[in-house]
Image (cartoon, rainbow, N blue to C red; front, side):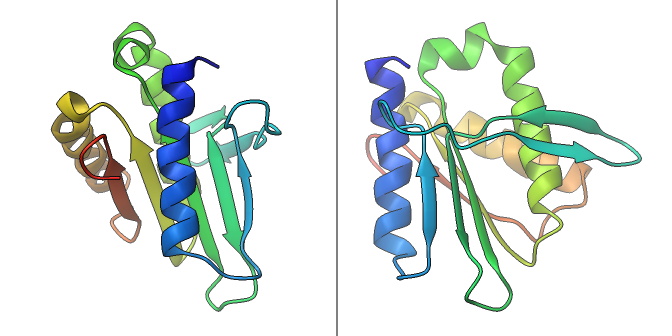
Length: 142
């Protein structure tokens, strides 16, 4: 991954550590040479796909179980890989909507934050997944 991508991954990792800290929180993040968080896969009546989020965090010791997925996008990555970006977002939303206590955290450059927020809100409605809580992180709000 690039240095810029790592910066946004770090925003997500720091946010999760600072806001969901718990002894039982398992975090796997794509920061630098860290382990790959792994593939998540979704098959529904209206959507099928798979992706690798930049962060997966889980706490199975709380009820309902906590699940957090995070994705980081640089400015160029956001626009150059738009088909992949949309698939990732669709997969993550359809995966998270099955969980009562789920969060989607996106880290992007400040100039993209409103666009990403609007896109996520539209997709939450489209996939009937408004139970998912989400947070947009950028250079100002991290």
